[in-house]
Amino acid sequence: MNIIKNRLQKLAENKFSYKFASNWVYWVEGFDKMEEELPEYWSEFYREAKEFVENDFNSFKNEFVEIAQRDIPSIIDLAFTLKQDDAIMTVTYNEEPTDDILEKTKNWIEGQYSDGWGEGLEQNAFSTYEDEDEMDYEDEETGETYTEYEPVQRNISVKLHPFEQKFSINVLK
Image (tube, rainbow, N blue to C red):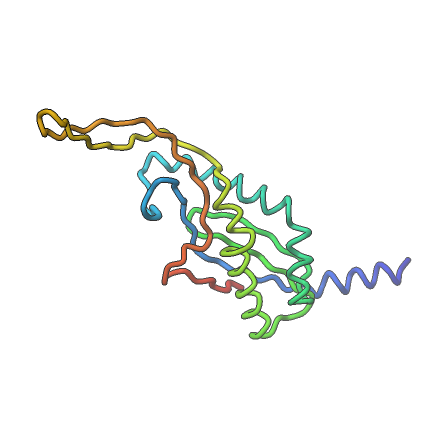
């Protein structure tokens, strides 16, 4: 029993955690571009987004660890949290990672955000809001243009990889 206890204690001592932080935005269906500066009344969506994304990550956490270990065997755990300004993936290794391993990890996370898990997030709305679409019509008899407003419900999802120049993953020790 002492052998197992000693082995577990040694393993526990050999944990090296790094945080990989990147930006994120709300993705709003029906808009021509991502809205980085959301109107103030949308701040309530942050709480919903955080809960949705973190629950989704945790439901696939074991699979993520297994997939990551195929390329980076020293990874022993992953955790994810959404902050007001950052998406943070905490990666725990069983040994001190080299610069090459940190770079491989950054690339793996970027791939998950853009083509893997993150793509799935974009396709699943966590909330909706009521909006109006402005429709311009021309009266054929008078030739006058008039505007009507049609109610529409917009889906809101999270986009972890905005495909913009400013996207970057920063390593925080």
